[in-house]
Image (tube, rainbow, N blue to C red; front, side):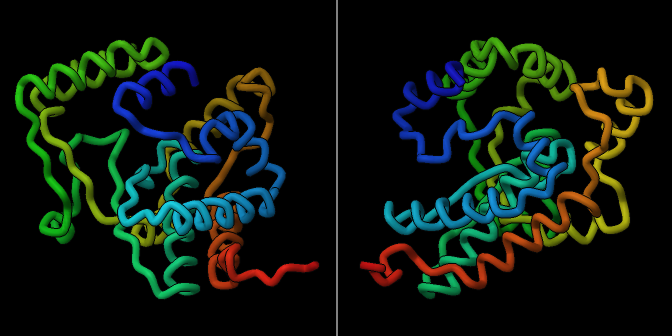
Length: 229
């Protein structure tokens, strides 16, 4: 959290109310317990925050199947923007970025709708300096640089949301986090992150997505809720 906060401060960003609310481990446990109400409340909080701050563009994680937390963030973003559109008629532009794929990864049919930013040498150096200075993720940054090469990160791609396509894909193909979790639990048992049950799309993510989408359809902005007094 300290490293992330430093990056935000350096670029002049302000964290929202949900920032740092849960650790990955806490999100995993909530998914295993089927705590739909927690994420429904997050949907409500995020949608109201976007309305209050008059946000016009949102960018967030792509649903790559590498982490249930990242994918859940994407589903929450899409549901929040859907809730705002349904309740107010307002459309908020919605983009995503990849974290576990080549930086320029974008489905062919979305390439013309994506935002492409070509960084100059100075901007690229600042970007890599920030990434390598993030001590907790330095190893991942170094591995990505070895795998893709420095120049690959000179291109930024913000593409339209692919959440619907990901959901259809995961109906028939287990996401990577499911395969990784199964291997870890079978091999190490409870010592694998203190978990004995595998997080799966069908049993845990899909019902959560359905719950937040249903909540999006019934969302009422906070400024329209009658005062109970």
